[in-house]
Image 1 (cartoon, rainbow, N blue to C red):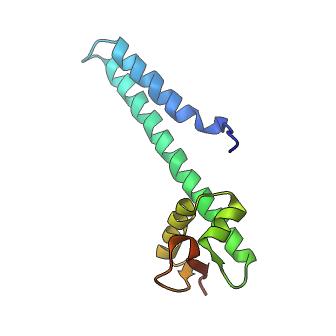
Image 2 (tube, rainbow, N blue to C red; image 1 turned 180 degrees about the horizontal axis):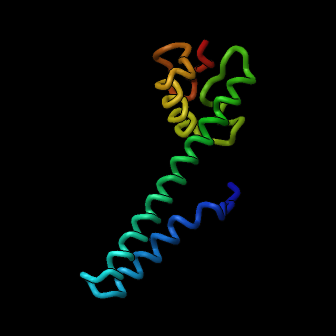
Length: 120
């Protein structure tokens, strides 16, 4: 597995860490402490937003793959094509199915064998 670093995702955790470090280095009940807590919260919110955006990008890739296949695809096929684990693909497909963008072909199949297609 190739390890890559996405430098656009570093600011959120870095800001949270700097805010927390600052909060521990100033006296409580001061405006500096309140500012440090705000900085920490901002960093945590940025990190959460990055994780959410990553999920949306993954969902978009799954939809794009299903759009290329006219008769749908199985979880394992999508995972292999996108280099994603079956569980990750299944979570994306579950979100997309809940939103009505994809439909499951049949019930009762094991996770890798579940087949999905784009909704009509």
